[in-house]
Length: 298
Image 1: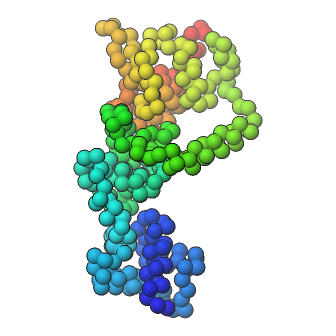
Image 2 (image 1 turned 180 degrees about the horizontal axis):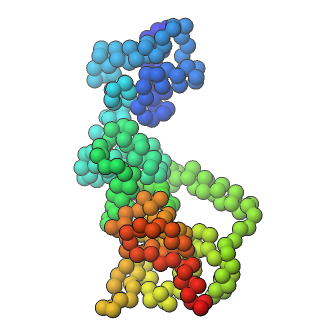
Image 3 (image 1 turned 180 degrees about the vertical axis):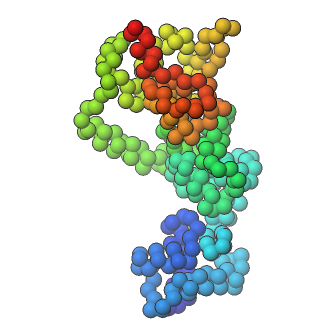
């Protein structure tokens, strides 16, 4: 088989996958997709040799680069990253990596996916055990601190995109959300346990239900809401204390443990308002509405 067919197949595979792969992975995908055919007994060894030879003979003009031991990527990924003016973010930082990933992928992604792609492409290094949590905290904080000046926008609970995108980039995301809504509407109606409180017959089954119920009793909890926002935390308010009304940042969750699942940063929030408190080691204050309702009903 001509050398160029291995090289062309490798390029197509890496371009489509968008992440570094081993020679074995590249070869398997290329053969499965019919991008190449070979009668040789060791196609994986041949693929690795051809890519290495391409890098050695062509140098900077090679399409490929060695990412780490046994894995190859495309040089254009690095070149793209080098050309980006990333809002003054330090090279190799979490926000620099997130911007590059979203720019390259050109579609909204979850914190987990952004972190996964960034680490595979060696866009940043982290010695921490929870890089996803750090990535999430960095993006949440950037949006909260810079507002409209942040290059990032939050799309849903755990998806992020770039402010510079036009609506065409988000059409697919909008279609997915519309489809999920239609499917949800076709499902049978399911309600929570009966509570018969303040005109609300059933207890909440999701975060929106928690927000609605809280809006009915916030005055009884001596908490005033000043603002609701799309980014984390959900709301800013004031809570009555012995010294006066102190400001408080609030996150609404169906269960308190969802705060941890969503990788929220406790240092950026003062209070969780939930229906069910199931996170015993929670490091911040929690108001469990289920218990509050029981007390209010006497």
